[in-house]
Length: 271
Image (cartoon, rainbow, N blue to C red):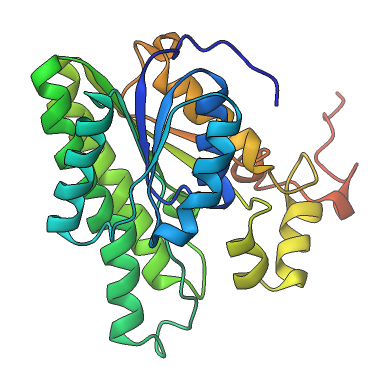
């Protein structure tokens, strides 16, 4: 992967849900920038392959398996990162689950799992990391949100609710922390070529959105989402806080867009 030189070299990052998909790409791009990365996942087995990849790049890495919805495990995780690397400069709240089902059929267990992981997890990790950052007077946090927080999506009541809540949490965190040198932003990807999308979204819907409704005509690549995350962590985004950046290939801009209707938009009236 190409190094972009975001000026993050020497920093320490904690990435939750860093074992695969977008999280893995964020971890590897941070490592390529010279950042020491703590990789969170559900188990030691899930994070070790990514830790090995980071070390192969010549960067420092630490596996920190923990359930982000458990306050005691989150506290122990953050303590382990500080014990190993001395500080936390960057937090990326990427851990997430999706349990699609119709609203009327969704179980309480599926609802709770999505809210606990996607929203409560970001709250607990953000709180624990921010306390460390406040002591140093600097830091940056990026929460992985979703375009569904801006537009909704049928069949995903728990997921959309958790991500909409995360968008609101991002704004409050930014208001409370930015005056203390800690910026907080969200990244809201559209459909991205990850395992979760492949397994949870029917192909007809996925391809219809990507090819028919998205102006760029394809899914996002995980690395393209990661690039935006690194920018928001960097000093290049030094006056950006409380924002949600859409990485959706223009999908939400295209209310009137459909490839099958190309050339069928309004023409300028002649007098």
